[in-house]
Image (tube, rainbow, N blue to C red; front, side, top):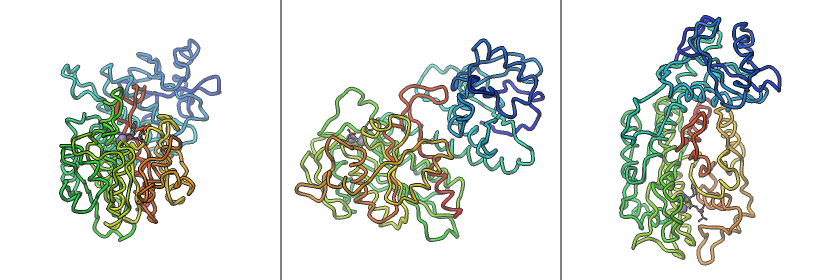
Length: 499
Ligand code: BES
Ligand code: MN
Ligand code: ZN
């Protein structure tokens, strides 16, 4: 997608379509601060508001052809909900909804008026770009009937002062890389497990690394066992597919020794549950159990392209979780790389096992800060549904930095507790720790388990099981992998780099 700024007055903008947000008129002014200054726009919108064709209902779109008084060939009105609640999240979705409304109509170019009341210009440009690029992604590569690949080819942003041109161009460049990295991860995540084995995931990571100038190292089963990653190896035992430990390194010349940011990802390319096998209903979705791993690969991609002056690495533990003849069994005791002993009560709680060793390994490689992302528990979806990801951490300041980055990126994250009392729930009977708690607080006990392995190192854990997959297509995003958390994590890295 080509992305440009358009500084022409609204009436003078030439385009296949001009997209403008309209707000819920019951709650006040239906147009944003820029649009309401345009006499022709106000006149054009009025009858649609009266008829209810444009109601301001979130992300509903209406279109007018040959709008009088405008040079644009079409005017698209996108619902933005309540005017005073229209922020970074809503603006992204509105831009996305405009793109997804126009795309199937073969309208491949449009101008979006960034017009959110009270949002900084750079934040608005970022939202519009990210919203449109994310919206332009569709999981259709295996459809043989190619309904001529309809894509948005050009986006222009209107509503800005020309004085901001160079600053906004930088924002556009960064946002494009963030959103394209998000789509890069979505493509990996959507792949079915027969086309996205641990080996293929590792190959894709190395290919990307070669293209962007990252270092890439892959370890197989022997090396994983040699490193004494007993928890990771135990999960991998059940599968005939070889596991892969993927390490990506970004080491810019002249970067300070500290911080060294470690991005740890759960890369279960298919989770059957192992011997504690899952019910068949819905099991097909467990191909997305490598979303955390794919996201961390995408985070390193974006970092490599944006080149912040700080060191970062990704460590992804990739394997299938299968009930093979050599698979681990409930009750088995494993020794993690850290030396801690783990009683595996349920082989379906495999994510925390592979992450235990990946987190510890990242520490041995010198990471000063750890962030992991994992589709770790169904319980996080029970708690937060598909709206917020669950954010845990052992360092309040670090966690708050993440939450602020997420807010600014229009990604929803909610802080979750890690009180000492929860530790009791995963106390081992014969070993140090067991891999499941009781029926209650499943997302928290899973995070408590990981906390044992991050130790004193500042650490954030993101449980994305509820948010990594979009069950039903929305006006602004396709069904399938969402690519959640990538934008927030890259933004966090950029902020740590700039002090
Ligand atoms: N990969 C699953 C978690 C999951 C569930 C991801 C639904 C996406 C959608 C994880 O490995 C798992 O099976 N967790 C168990 C833990 C339980 C055995 C303590 C769960 O959530 O049921
Ligand atoms: Mn599982
Ligand atoms: Zn899993």
